[in-house]
View 1 (cartoon, rainbow, N blue to C red):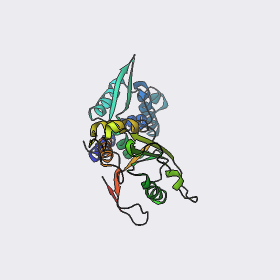
View 2: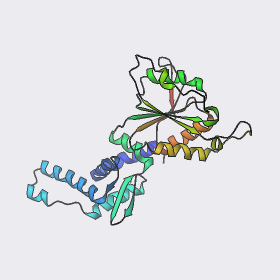
View 3: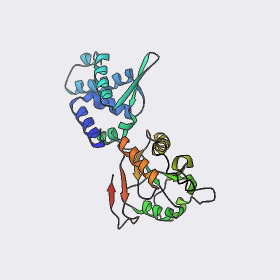
View 4: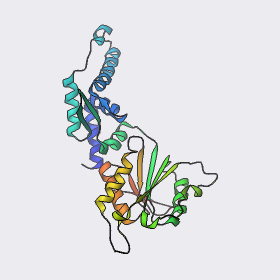
Length: 257
């Protein structure tokens, strides 16, 4: 299912059934039990009933049954939007990680932005940061940079924050992740790396931040293997990804993947 079709599917589901919107809104905030979801739906139903003039006595008796919850959650599970499992006597529900960004877009929920990129060479840092500080499109709170370990060994400066102008109004925290040589390959052996294992490495690093951050992927400067891996993850998780013609805030074009 493509990113756009998943967005459209979610829009269709919540347009026809209010309970499904409530379920997704609740799960965007984290793991929930079936009882918590029933309570949230009941709260909405009761407010709607009161607004329609239903007596308080009748409203107080209103309950959301387990079959009603089952019908709606099963539908969302079948579509790959949520997942559930049994733990002790409870059934727990959460968003399928690959549906997190589509759900947020449809429900118009925003999180702090994490800008994900890869740099091939240390000298790429200056133009990259100057672009990030001055461009009008993104205002990240966190920057994650993936690099090949073989080209960013000890002694190579990682100084992106030093290139932020004193008058720069944007500030973020930066996290560097070295992709090991056994994944990306080595120049000496003319090894070209393993795409799936590189995807797994990047994916594991990114999933930690998925509940707390929106993400965008900059595919402009990284080594080909890392860029391919980021492209695959962007497609799988419906995360916006793009390429920039040049790192000039006043003279650049962005092409979305």
